[in-house]
Length: 341
Image 1 (cartoon, rainbow, N blue to C red):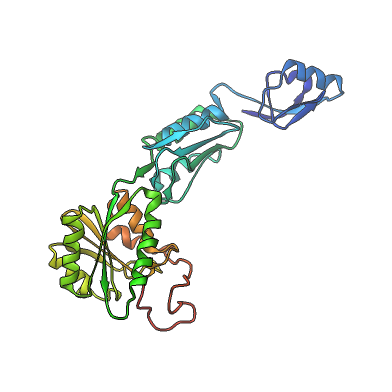
Image 2: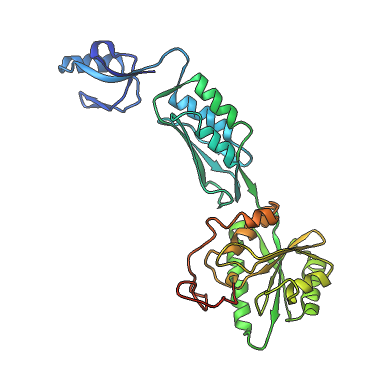
């Protein structure tokens, strides 16, 4: 690609690098200079323009952007028509955004002329939301560069995992210090969290804060109501694997996969399973509508994206979230551990 000033008499058929105006007509940058426009500019005394001419083996910015976007597109995405060297990708289904970061980094490392930007990995997205954009910086790239970028990005490293689990069962444990109105509010907040995903609370039960109570509650919401995801809200936060909620999960025939998470608020989250149904022991901050670690795990499970120990421990970088009003003892300036994480 050649870029620079050329005599206006030789500019017809080239790409204008800057907007041109003549006779009340405006030619936007990146457009082909017509013979008429070149003639009018010459008649107005314009001697040269800054223009772009493509070499053999070059591909125009729009074609290149569209081609690379198509290579990057995975499941449940659509590619918009490219314009000004940009091509955007949009979700065709609500769900969780999945990004193969190593491959996106590899594409961006091919050449400075090729860029790909995405929303953060594992971000919940709505149908029609833009999730990524491909931008070709100059007006054209060589076929060699485009081929390398497309190879590195082939196979759809950007995709959306649609929400698959839709039946949520809730077990709330009770102590004398916990008001029913608090449980009612917790259920409303959870229903609001679930609404964008298409999931709903199909059963809720309130039990004593004992292992027996938790076990009975899980049997009720999973076996009787058919929940495909269970959430346990404890009247007291989980402090140990031998505490009430993990003991109740095991008593019901389930298992505890992981306790604790390097996300604050959200440290005291528990992840388990029973008969193939994920079980979340919710941290106290999950009673608040503000974003916390519970949201991150909830959306992954609703999209049926596997979550293991390695996934959880990898959340630490970026895991310090904003303080929430409901926190009884803010981290800033505090010295004692918060029992309601």
